[in-house]
Length: 305
Length: 327
Image 1 (cartoon, chains in turn brown, cyan):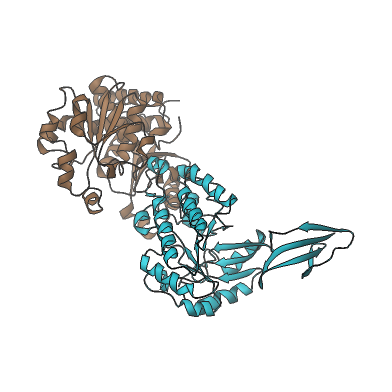
Image 2 (cartoon, rainbow over the protein chains, first blue to last red):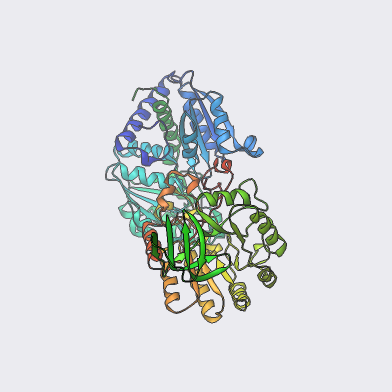
């Protein structure tokens, strides 16, 4: 396995299973041993967040701390970026302080990959533009495996703004690699270009696909999509693609509703349905910490691989 | 060693004419009509060939004035000479834009100090803003023959119409278009397609180029007179549109760049902004069509679109790095 985690595309099914197994044992260990194991004592993990995301940053930092690593936090607003330093110089400066891994979040697709070309330490993609959010995908697989026992054969539906979503890109890759089927449901304006080259089915009819669905994965719908004519209005979007109470009732009893958060209640998900989904959505957050522990553990040499 | 090139079209500073060229030991000794060969001369039939002292690049960004951190007219000329070029058309997207005779004269003076011929082109619109015509007549009288807002498309149909009509009265003027509809490519950084989709990089759809080429061809059909030149043609459909326009007898010419007929959008997979160019690298189908267009004469000329940027500008993510970030 690479010393970096940049995209789900770089992982084999076996790599993913290793991550999920490790996440399972580490989350069990940390829940027993007063929240901490000494695996990464003396190692330093730096979070480089060029784009704000308190949830993801806290999740990585919690994961690192539970493995007893030291954590260094870098946020763009308080840093040299505001002074015009290049991405390369920023990355090399942080590396020079003596870190073992860089967790990079950036609004530009490929920024973590570029940094990985320049530094000698492990780079973990914490979300880059519309490209990838691999630890989100691993966490979602972890949630699903706990819920269903296995991913193989699961019928998943991802609804919403696929085109602009790093979560959609990494989850499509992760779900299909693990043997699930994926159907994308969105207006054509919010489907990615050349969607026929993706390993998915496509539909515009949420009502038609819901009865045969095990997992409905809703994406956050942003107001700016209305302003740039991707949809006529958020309310039309909610009517056609929102998971209403009526639509949620079409799901079979064991089906689950997932959302990467933060939810827009009343847009992609009705308020009542969001309440129903809460246990799973909360589990997604917990799973995120577990798989991030597994990633740090693997990449920082917790085991010899 | 004596060499005689017979019957070629010689193109140099004084224009184009059909003459013979005699070369002795690597030096041109005579240019004239019906030169006779003596016994030990190798004679080459150059009929239907262009004979020139070197390559001509109709599309280079020499960056001066304003972009001297990236390139100067002297360094660009030296680089061109090393590559075998003896004449280069300098693009007008300087700072300020080359949209008046004072800057044209400055570019020409700086060019005269270098090892090759530098021909300044000039902007079609004032400040390359696409709103009002630059002083095209004065520029023409000052020796400019090549007009372009390159770097930006002349997006307004009515401005393009006026430019076609106005320059149509000036013999030998070439109106060159950077064909990309700005509303369709806004925010985009590579060809929109399978690879942009996979990489999550905002795309620049091929239709942005076709729309402008098709529109401008129709404008030329209504308002002929000038030669309409399409710069850096990059797609299969563009080649087809130009092929048809030529078949219709319109005065259309086109260029293609080496990167568009050798590379594809797959090159962007590693997020290296060295592959970020405008128009973007396209698909394999497009690359093949551009090659066929070159082979059958639909595309008239290979142009480099040499467009240097400072090295440090590549120390950024793909979308933040400048376009044409070639070394």
